[in-house]
Length: 348
Image (cartoon, rainbow, N blue to C red):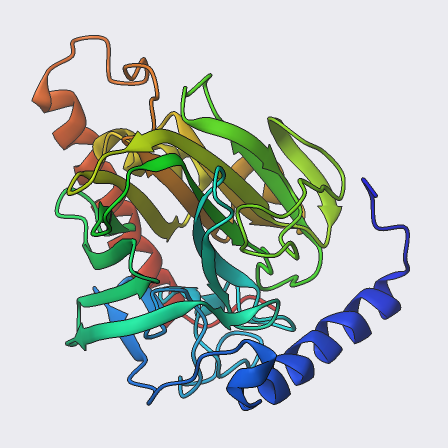
């Protein structure tokens, strides 16, 4: 199946049923394959971007203040507009790691999978940072370390480290990250962009945000596979499969994931350039007038670095730090201006 040929009403009902199923599944006995643990999930923020991080490192947790659309679950939120991007309807955001040779796999996604074959080692968080460490069998230790990006207020970085703690080499290391974009103020109807730039570790991409986080599950799509610009509007998301080859005993593989948002597409892309993460990414934008062209009122970001991408070609022509600093200053100035505008009476 390469496309969901169902009505919007059925899509929304499907999302709600997924969420209900997830609640029942996570509380199910271990015989069903779900591993439960005391939940220390946390909501973190740098004052502009807010993330809800579960114990195992995937997004979407309960207990937040109402978003622009009244959602209290927090996945990825842009505080200047109050818009949520992953929590409305379906808590579909997750990750998985696997060895494609032996079939060893573990993954986590609240609504789609629950938590499968992952043992929690530790979860430590404060107001701005969170670190999840889990173990897959006796073979892999996986760390997701979330912290603000210093060069821009519009991004968080999750530094991912996969370590072979077993007694045999991992023959074909895989990692999947998947999310269902639900961009407020028009959740369930968004424009999606995916760019890969020929990155050597990217095996597959599509817009199926409802897919399992299991890296060994079949590749699927809704509207497209590969790259796309402003696909939609539809109820879809972003799926990235990565292949990192073999991993020797005691060796580690590291890369970065970025989550964020900005007031416009221009500022979102500038933030990616500043963070050196502008070659492999997805953007999610609301289906409002000029939404896909300007990215207003918020463009949400999901990006990667350290995945075999080519050198950036988006740095200002001078190649100097002055150009990057100018981009950062522009973004901060725009954010302050928009905060001031939000305090003014709304136009009727």
